Length: 190
Image 1 (cartoon, rainbow, N blue to C red):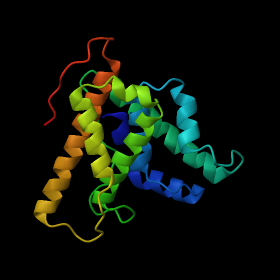
Image 2: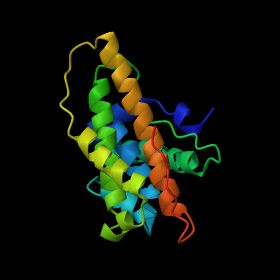
Image 3: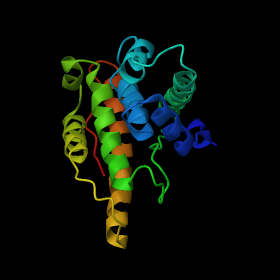
Image 4: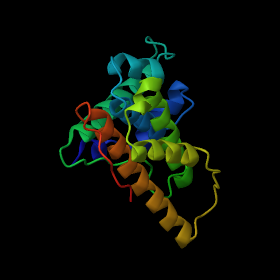
């Protein structure tokens, strides 16, 4: 069982709400993956500043939230170090009342872009053509309108495909950014 599978989305969501954070666990996970993918220097400080810098360190609810988010950050790091690229998006199970499935994927795309963007403008220049295309796709997914209604079977299938695409695209960007200099290759997104 991977570290991300041991985390409970609902508990993390509740802790974030009680602490007053305005984003979702999906977005927080994606910020971590973006930071790791973008090869951001001083990732731990960047993580703290991006996710919970505004939390009162003396507040018990804020500390509970920080603990949850730090576990999420550690799990993201473990996922990206996994030789088998076992990245799983941290999104709620179907039927979770706090976040709609399409909203979670939109949030994940937004979070990834934010985290990756912390590496600075020069980071994207290291990407292959497919990596740059993936970032553009992340941007488009981040703009999705969220319909809070029940999903038809074909809509659910489309969301499953988007989730898989985000997973593969994030791994591609990570590979591009961590390839030895001059070894950025051409990849194919599926």
